[in-house]
Length: 221
Image (cartoon, rainbow, N blue to C red; front, side, top):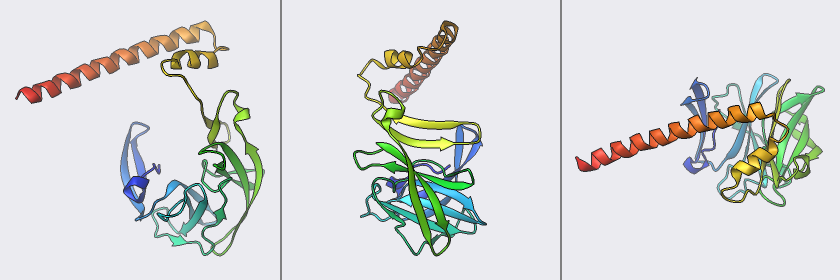
């Protein structure tokens, strides 16, 4: 996993010790960078790292940079055509790259109107150590998910496709919003979800009480 570590000025890779609950840092892929949304790809015998921003003065929504290496741990060599994309409508990565009908597809964020407004799918026609060329294809807008204000990322496998979207939810009305989306779900499933939510809430309250008790004990000592 490559989490967002721009505030550290790094690109870091983490390994799951107990997926998905426990992770340890495996390597620092780059230092002294302002990178965001870094995405790895293994392709044609090499590892490729797509990342936005990188340079501190570079807009993460405007510029896409590419690096390559023999190993996912590096060392990384900058592509001679960096930045390979200079367009806020598709530069910033929006999910893992994937193949569809034999073509390599790179999801990019359309941030021309706002951050994470839409996802632009791009077909990668050329990817070598000396050249890069991609072609915009389909654009996925908020209309794909009714009521959403933006489509942030797209990830897919042979069996599943996952998108995350953003909504404007009035404060203290999340439950009604959530249930509206679950309207087709049968009542039995809803009762089970309410039971699970109740257990989780009680567990959280219990853990908070224990933490407060421990903190209070330390102050008394």
